[in-house]
Image 1 (cartoon, helix red, strand yellow):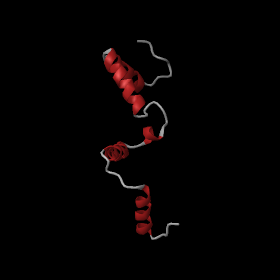
Image 2: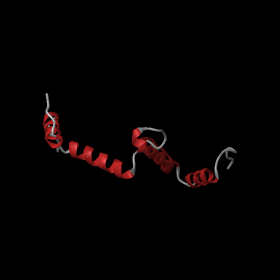
Image 3: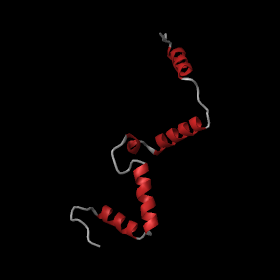
Image 4: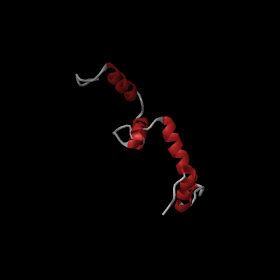
Length: 86
């Protein structure tokens, strides 16, 4: 394979490993990288794996209907941090 001269040895090795995958596996890999933000500087892409797991769990809780009203959430925060809500 021919690589750009600016490619590092690590990058070249990754390309070699990816080239060994089937076309379907390469497409799955690219799709995963796009979905997780690895191909851009998105907020999600900068999150740690622990932060992503916490976010995913929060989304799963919401999907299961394990949510509270926004007003109740703000009331809880006001009580917790001792401030008055308007």
